[in-house]
Amino acid sequence: MVIETWKNSGIATKFPTYRNSSLVTVHSWQTGKQQDDEAEGLWRIKDSIYDFTSFIDKHPGGPFWIRETKGMDITEAFEAHHLTTAPEKMIAKYKVRDAAKPRIYTLTLHEDGFYKTLKERVREQLKTIDKTPKRKSDLIHLGILLSTYLFAVASAKYDSLLALILAGVALCWTVIVSHNYFHRRDNWQMYAFNLGMMNVCSWRISHAISHHIYPNSYMDLELSMFEPLLCWVPNPHIKSKALRYVSWVTEPFAYAIAFFLQLGTRIFYSLRHANIMYWHDLLPLTIPLVMYYGSFGSATLLFCVRQWLAMTSIASFAFCVIGLNAAHHDPEIYHEGDATREDRDWGLFQVDTIIDRGDLKWSQFLVLTHFGDHILHHLFPTLDHGLLPALYPVLYETLDQFKSKLRECNHIEHIIGQHKQLLRTEPNPRAPGSGK
Image: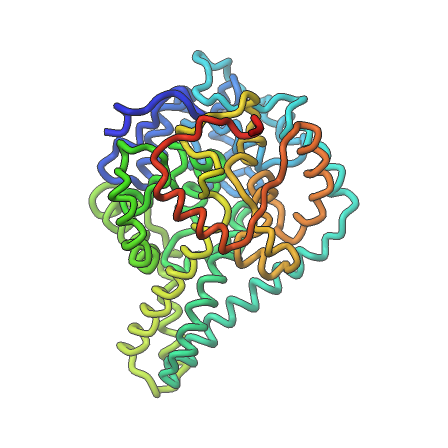
């Protein structure tokens, strides 16, 4: 059991309950967080307890965010998802009492700290920047989405391997670009994420509420969901070095089945425990149906299903090659168990868990399809990726002020670093920002 070897060296004073679950899922993560967070069955922000029950259906971002976080401490998520000061003033009427116990999280959001200082500067910067890149993001998303169906039909109609590969890549990019939309209020673009057999509702929890808020910690569901196939936590008790070398061999297989495994886990959990399936889980079936009818009888339905499964496997492999080597895994990046900096500011914690892809910044298309501008996206997830480049001046200014820096490398360096991290079993004794 991991808890036996865990020490309070990370972001929380309590080992997360969900990591002792026999089946780690979004639902087990939520249930565990509700048990751990000292939110008293309601919603906790800092040291106050709120009852947002009557506000669920009034929430401008949609009811999902409020409904699915009941019983949790949402302090960091609330800050990251609201750029203006209006929400903080509005929630005062929903406060019911002060919290009975201290927060279990060690991260801070002081008014004069890094994140709040940067956030104020970003608010001012957004008043003057060009907003047209948002429209370009929408066009890129639509173009890749249509390309997915067109290449899929071509692969069925002409039995073309090239079209099949292009369809798989387009499907991968569709899923990644759709991620640009599910951090914000409900919109139609976010549902294109489901074409990869994953689900936007599940990923709003595992990615937006878990990974984005607590990256590379035990509270990061995206860290634990790949175990035991892939383990990036530098703890020999979780996975020995010998088994970590095996990860290099099993890694391509894990990449190719990742999409299928996500769907399979959710179906299994829905049948054996609580239903976590939605109507939009059926959206992936539109691909083989369009292939079948679009081929005008030149391909059988069985052949179209086979092509669809093949292109989904290609997309799954490409998604993992891009996503798992995008920003978060390198021996120089903070992972659970490593020494932490003295300043526990949440924004600086985000900086410590990321090395950006410096080779993408010249292209909005590449940024959207390869998880680019990653630090700014983590700090301000509701902003369209097209707006992020304009925020670099204030980011650099604030990093300099707080004696931190933006780290960058290219994709090949990330891939090499990620494989080194898979082998690392000893925690880094030197805290980020502490110098050589």
